[in-house]
Amino acid sequence: MRSVHRAIYLAIALLLPVLSFSQEKSIHQQKEIMEKNKAIIQDLYENVMNKKDMSLLPVIVSEEYTGPEGSKGVAGFTAPIAPLIAAFPDIQWKISSLVCDGDKVVAKWTWYGTQTGTYRNIPATGKAIHINGIAIYELKNGKIIAGEVQTDRLGFLTALGVLPADIATAPVNEQVQFIDKFLVPSAGIAAFKQRVAVNRQFIKTLPGFISDAAYEHFDEQGNLVFITIAQWENKAAVASAREQVQAEYKRSGFDMPAMMKRLGISMDRGLYTRATE
Image (cartoon, rainbow, N blue to C red):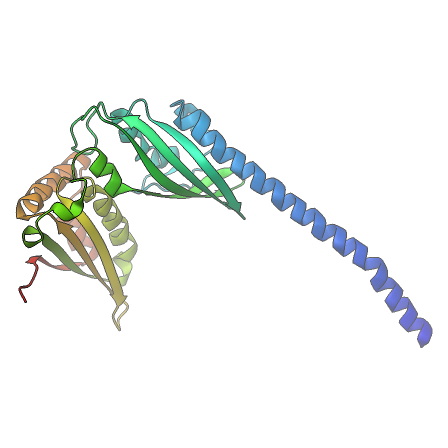
């Protein structure tokens, strides 16, 4: 019996180095993949975006990638970047840090540029500005399959003179809240949220915009109750924003009433001012 136990112990002892070697090999492979992913993102900024050479994107961006407006692949990736480059042709991104965790790479950067063209209804100002931002990319098999970008939008609009340097200078008694409440059937939630993301991104570029927020919960039937609150400097800013939103819908060929009807979405909308105490 003792000989059997010795044989088992010997077998375990012989296996341990193998398992350890296998684990070390796996860790080494993971590190190699992460370093390659970081290099891909570095290449994206240095050789694609800074040099404006979009011909390199097919080897960096996967066909799986979905842009903010729903387009796929390279087209989806360039959709939000192209208008920015057109308005700021000298734009340059400077990466301050790259951090990789698994299949995700986080890039912290500052971009510099001079606005010589119209950007989202903001006429050319000729101003040279710099904006900080963070981008999170997810990669698979050496290509970007998803991305999320967060920038200092308030600082961007302030630098262009669209908003006052101190937003608090806007008279509080004139500020208004534009509040929408949506009831969205479960089958239409994905399409609805995709559209809301586009709209929220667009209104942040409009004159008079101060801030916005969104809240949600699900009712007992699984329907989404979704509330958006956008704060504007005054009623005139809201009226102007409505016109520009409708113009953008027309330009992009989007029919909001048709989407609401198709998805069975109901909406309650109102313009609110601060209550007097």
